Length: 466
Figure 1 (cartoon, helix red, strand yellow):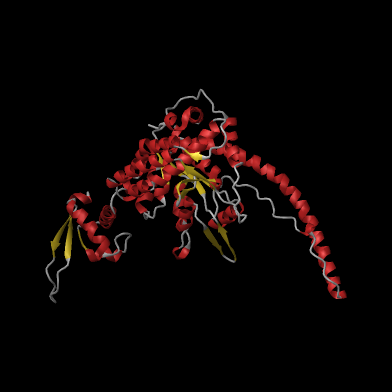
Figure 2: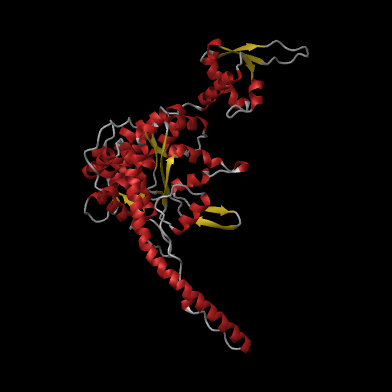
């Protein structure tokens, strides 16, 4: 059960519930958009710092899981549509600045041309060349904000984030294609390293073919999107556990009851809230660089975090595979969520902007994770929670069925060069799992006429083939 009121308070609970009702969607899907949208809106303007040496950006990645009829997209649109309205407003403000800049740029061209002619005459006459006039420099072109991006190459995102250092949001209606497309480059290239950095807000340099590289000091991109259970299952079983999927907070609710909505959400409230967040500024340090403002934890919040980390250590003891990776990232997720909850409280009230993250915000973040997020992860990542040996065993079993083998040798399996079954070190643990499960049975082969050690033959249980 989603603990809305206990975690988000009455004002946000009312808005989330009304938005979900209006979209005939579970409130979970509305939340799947609200959390990363708010996190990306805060972006690099504010980071949470429990103590020196540990800082987290408010970047969240969420995955709305459900069948096509579950109204994932309408639930996400309850937040994305107001965000697009805010983007249009901000772009409209910049468009006026840009119109003035274009006029100044035309005058600058004339001033530049006049100055160059004057320099030529001075050099020809042996006189001192005049200084370049101030009017010849129109200044940097105003950048049109990009609050949400549906699709963009890594190269394009690098350019956007170099101009928009607060970060941005990637919104995908279907995440499966995006995740599969990360390995689209020939020669084994991949976008995965870029996205691993984009979650952590680390510095990153984007190399571009035929153009100068682009460096981003803090690569921060929120991600949200939907995926169908079958596509997720296939993705989990085929993906390497490099931590990318474990960064997603999965939300997989039961479908909402089919009924006509009786209440509508307050559109002005959500748009005003998002606009306030996007008007937060990044401070400038002594080197004239834009940097995040650090939100420290209070002493009580640090104590709560220590208790939470101990609980996470216990949860890790009973987990394997992708679920174990997800649980290992929960302390960082709790820190990020506590910062987001702090600003949701601010948006729902009239208090001045918060100066630190308090214990109450962290308690609610921990409650959300323990009572809800962990349960969602166990449901979503169940098929990928096996050990490497178990996953390899499943691949071997599928191969046995595909080949129609009644018996086989290790050499025959290795010769096919299938993923996770390419070496004896990968194959032998998988064979052990299948032997223990009475799927195959080892039988010694008689030596050949030249002698030597006989190779093992594995007999397949007939029940497997039917």
